[in-house]
Image (cartoon, rainbow, N blue to C red; front, side, top):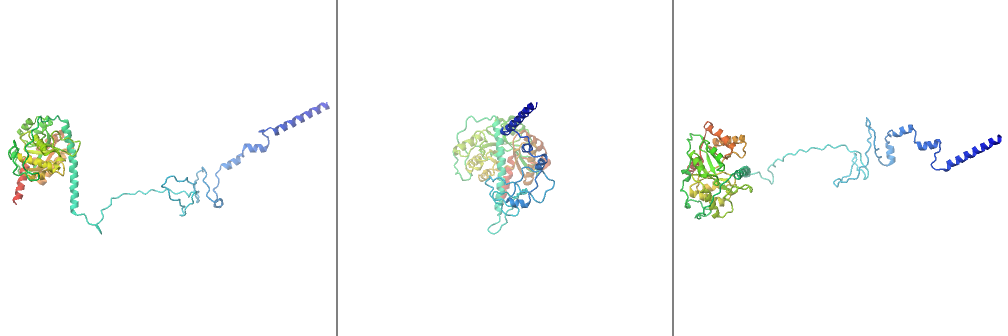
Length: 462
């Protein structure tokens, strides 16, 4: 038994030795001791809590010892109270925009060396700059005061700009009127009349009328009756673009007389329209189509255009004037370009003078030569004062009628031009019957021409 026990003990010792040898020789085998557990399991829980807590800020001595500024930690918990020392931000990336050229400066005013970031700059509030118009400089050395003539010229330019805007609006409206109408063009144009003997720049006194022309004083022969004035201010209402709509023409004829109806020479049923209008006591003008400034505005067929030869221009004037009868004169349909050309307007004035007709300048441009040339040729003439319906809003049309009344009271007479639009006719139907109560009287254009001629004669005699 002792022998068996010794054999067993020897076998156990050999096995233990082999096992111990294998553990030291085999790689990756864990050694179950405290040192291995400490290396693999990490720091104890107390040490972990200590590592997760925020590190205290470095002292100034530590910062100086390190020779620079320590970078800001990636994330720091918010603290309720700020200390006097402000931790500097991390170094900023190098500027990419070429506009950033100035070096950063520290709060003390010293430049921060390149590669290092200065302390965080406080937010800068952008100053709002309010722009104010500059006052005109006072006259001083080397500078003179603006003469009164310059101020007057500026006022004239402003007035011309307003007239030009009104003309553009009006010509576009008249373009639409013509475009939407079924106009009748003359079948055969008459031949050109023989040339008039006067020179281009001479007044038209003594010019013989062309063949077939009416004798002088036609405007007086076909003038509508003027009601008694009784010391009241005179108002003339002119309706342009007549002859394009039968219904609107008949409604205009039914207005209180005397209305002045300006009829387009390419309108429809002109003979009947003229006969009905004159029988109702109204006065007739030829609404002579002339060239506008707007390229997209069409004055209609057989219009007077700048640049035409004088023979062609005379032919078109004659063709338009022969389209109807019983009228006292003409006014321009559009014409903001044509009436500004003295060369072409002289041909018109010579034709009017030869036929004894008057001229109403619709004044579609402040550069119109019509009124001046008409007086030069001795043609009875007047000028428009108010446009009624450049805006077809009924309230604005009534406002223009009130402006017409104020103008008449101020100067003794006023001329307002509109169209036979339903809104305009509605406004006139409500406004005309009360003229007497407003101290006004409705008159034809010829009455104002007579008054102008009488005033000019008095001034000339004086």
